[in-house]
Length: 228
Image 1 (tube, rainbow, N blue to C red):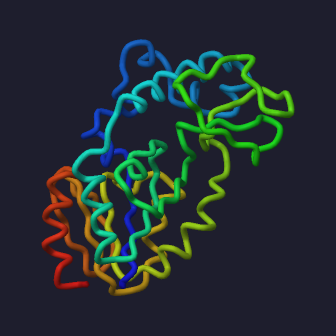
Image 2: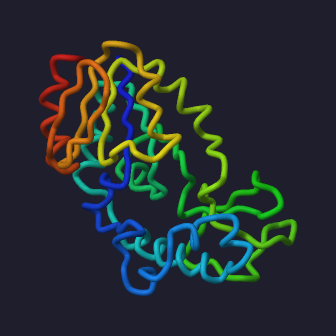
């Protein structure tokens, strides 16, 4: 089977009701994103950072995969599908996709502040001060914050390099280093971009589908039939 690589972003999960930082409103309107999503923020005000991620996690515990997530999972019947996502939710997994790489971490997981390899899946949405790892250190969100390295990029690059087809969905590819991934794609392979805003991809053989995730995946399936 051909290697189909999905590059997904926030627009993928908006139809499931998950809000981005800019959409959360209320209390968070007074903060810059770096005040709740950076190592400096964690050092200066860990309670605020945890409150921010607790609110996002609570949303996630109530969310369900949308038609886009489910449609991508169904593509595994015809393609070797690998998903490289900027999203920290696990809706791709819940929809049934079996090969997902999270570039920016996972919201349902927390990790030790002294040993990054000690990672735990949360059974509920709330992380509190005093919640510790087995070594006794405070747990933090398992999220790549602004100013931190993105170690999963080293796994993502060879995935894209081996792609026969690429689908970009729900991301403008404006945030680096993730934005540079499409540049590692083999020359001349077909690239499909599903997004109402039609982000401009400077590559050959790009087909734009100006629809949201759910409807866009339906159209994509029809176009992929001849590429199996």
